[in-house]
Length: 261
Image (cartoon, rainbow, N blue to C red; front, side, top):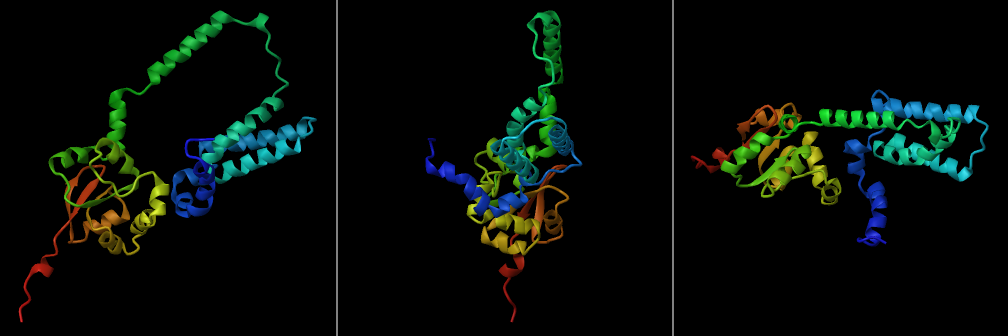
């Protein structure tokens, strides 16, 4: 029972079997990297479970074991499912740590507990990012500067935007029609995601530009396609800062000139 009926129940299977590009290219579907802190924590968890199985004299329920193995496989294969692994493994760890002494109310220290809670709340307030820091982070990672430019210089044509910026642009200015954003499934269904990836891989990008009648391109510096546009006389930079470059396609002057016979 849910507001969307059978479609919501079917969606995980649609994702698994029909959204190949989504799973292959989106960061949340990559495998666990054991060089990162998240991967090291997962490795500690696996070693802890193995040691618990070797040391503790405990008989495993087959259903419990199968669910745990499935959660481990899912979490190691796709980092998004580490959340599922955490939910499944929590009661298993609770049983493995049953050697800790049980809670004894008579030994409670309410004054110390209160002091610790107040200290933690104070640290949270102190470490909470200020508005200025949040704005600085946004300005360093998203094209905030180009929004001001676009308000005084509205676009007259379709724009190809960098994938990570689609949601930011649409949220700040709904009048901007983005080419792609993080709602990957929608764009994969329509073939837009595949065309965007072809541009990133420089697989005949001009064909994609012509297909969607793209007149503007908003990309960060350092991308391969940005380099191509910077050296293509058909494109001109009309806005540039440390985060982004906005290109405009120039009219084909040679096609408009009369031919001399």
